[in-house]
Length: 377
Image (cartoon, rainbow, N blue to C red; front, top):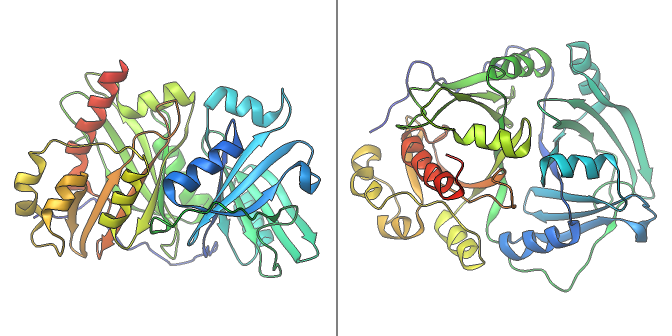
C-alpha cells in the first residue's frame, strides 16, 4: 500500500487567507474555431450550450461560446479578424488556456492585494453591467501568457457576463457526469518551478502542499519535478511542473516545444462515477492513454481494497492510487488538439486528497509510448 513521503503534506496552512477564493469561475480557451470547438466539447464531453458573444450581440472583434456542465464553465474564444492579439496567441501556442477565472467576493480587493504583493496587472478592476446587474472583474499575469481573472458576480443575475446573450440550441447531448474542476496543472521552463511556487506563495497566499522530485516522477528515459500549490481554503489547486534531466526528451519539454512556452498542461475534472463517465466519453470518441495490462496484476496489492470491480477499470484503463485519506481513480485523455499540448484528466476521489503518485511511472511510460509514435521522445 503506498504511503506519503515526508515531503508531502495534505493540509494547507491557513494562518492568513488574504485572498479567499470561492472556486473556479470559468476557464477561457483561445481556439482557432470557437463554433467547432463548442460542438466538440458538447458532443464528446457532454457540455451544454449556455451563453454567446459575437456579431449578433454587438461584438465586432471576437466570438465566444460558453458551454457548461454542472459547475464547469468553458469559454471558447476566437478572433473575427486577422492580425489580432488573440490570433497571434493562437498562431504561437495553438489552442490552449488563456484565462483561469477565480470566483471571489471582492475582485477589487483581490487585485489590490495581489498587485501590492508584486503581481503584474493585466486588467485593473472594471465594472461591467447590463440589464441583469453588474460584475466586477480584474486580472493579473501568471506563468507564460496565462491570466488569473478575479470575478465578483454577487450583483449579477444574467446568463454569464455582461456582453453575453443566452445561447439556446436544439442540440444538447446528455451530460457525461463531470462535476467541477479538481485542479489545473501548469508546465513551466527548466529552473522556473520554484520561481512560480514563490509567486503563488507570496502574491496569492497559496501553500505548497505536496512536492514531487525526479526520484518520484521518472522512468528509464525521462523525469520531471512538480510542486502542488493550494489556496488557503483548499478549493483551488495548481500543480506546477518543470522538466528534469533524463536520457530523452520529457513530456514537459515536448509541451514547451510545441506550445512555445509555459502554459496549462491539463485540466483535471471530477466525477462521482468514473466508470460511467469514461465509458460514455470513450463511446463519444474521446481517446485515452493506456497503461500496460500488467499494471492491473499487482495494483490491488499496492492500494488494498476498493469498492469497484477491477475488471471494468482494467477494460477502460482507469488507474488507482491510495493515500492515508482514501483512494482515487484517474485516467488521462490524449491531447485534445493537433499539437501534443493540453489534455484532460478525469478523476474520482474516494477520500484521497493526493494526486496519484503511485501511478506516475506507469502513466509516464504510457506518455513516452505516445511521444515515440510522434517522434518526439
